[in-house]
Amino acid sequence: MTRTRILLVDDEPGVRLGMKGYLTQHGFDVDEATSVAEAQEGFRTHRPDVAVIDYRLPDGTALELLPRLKELDAAVPLVVLTGHGSIELAVQAVKEGAEQFLTKPLELSVLKVVLERLVAQRRERQRLMADRSRTARTQVDPFLGNSPAIRALRDQAERVRDSDSPVLVTGETGSGKSVLARWLHEVGPRKDAPFVDMNCAALSKDLLDSELFGHEKGAFTSAVAAKPGLLEVADRGTLFLDEIGDMDVAVQPKLLKVLEEKRFRRLGDVKDRRVDVRLVAATHQDLQVAAREKRFRSDLYFRISTLILHVPSLRERAEDVPVLASHFLAEMGAHRGRGQVELEPDAERALMAYSWPGNIRELRNVLERAVLLSGTSRLSRSDLRFESLLPAEEPLGEDLTLEELEHRHIERVLAREGGHVERAATKLGISRSSLYAKIKGWQHKGG
Image (cartoon, rainbow, N blue to C red):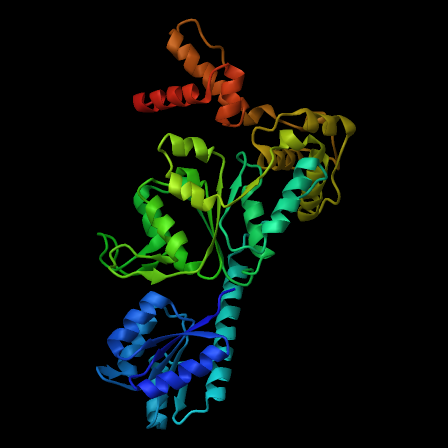
């Protein structure tokens, strides 16, 4: 984790020098400001963990500054120092948002203890918030199974768990990419800080921009108040961007700046803000192809692909299906008070033989439906319903044009292959680029 950052606001050079030297020796990073205006700018730019503010400044007092800083980030503890302390002044400072009111001359060892306590309290609050934000649904161990593919993934993930470098998680839809991303956070050095996730495919360009970077009041018509973005919420923690291949090209340069400079700018703001996050991104697309076709920035691809973890599909680890199924059934049986639900041999064989275009997510759905609809503690092949998860095999029809027949056939192959373009192209006997061109052609025609 990074060192604790302190913003020291005092117009006396000697006081700043002494405090900064002492705090730096004891493991703090110290940024300085000499006025109310500089303090606001430093607070906005450096995102301190704690601000220490002298009461009297050349252009105002701490009482004027405190509410402005609280408006920028209410979670940052504020400490006020003064050489002319009084009970009335202390009460007023606390009302305006100060966590501590200390009088000069001040023992630096006392200040150090106060700062350490405030930082510990803030991080505990962050940890509790992160705990509350975790999904209620039980998360699956990303490495359930004993197949060579899953053992290789486990070994690779263990090697990168403590790194701060970006991680790109690849794999088919439903294969468990988000579960692996959360695991990387919860076993890594940032586990006590927030884990924030966002699906890039679910948001338009403008919403994505606002949600990720935040906005200032008046940045657009409906921006009636300033709003921190998910980057700020994830500060010192992990930001998980799911389906990053669908991120709008106009937003990608801003994310690249965050990764390279650890700075960003809210919509409608003119000043940069500092942020410290570890990025974990996931995609089911081939980003190298997307970069070649100018659908994804190559510089961003190279930056986020420092470490790549590929989550295998269930077809690549069919021997793990019984292990996963047993895990899900135990969880579902306990949740519904039915005790252990087991598979008959014919059901287990059927599960292992199925192609699983939806991977682990589909496996869970098939089993959950079987448990809900069957009244038995042992599921047979007849309790499993696979076909409802795929498009119905309608007759192609004699009235279709050749182009329409081709369109429908390609859609079926894509569905069977879980949307995986490369495998679908192989089944169709055409190149991947040709298949992409056909899909783009339909999109332009509204098909």
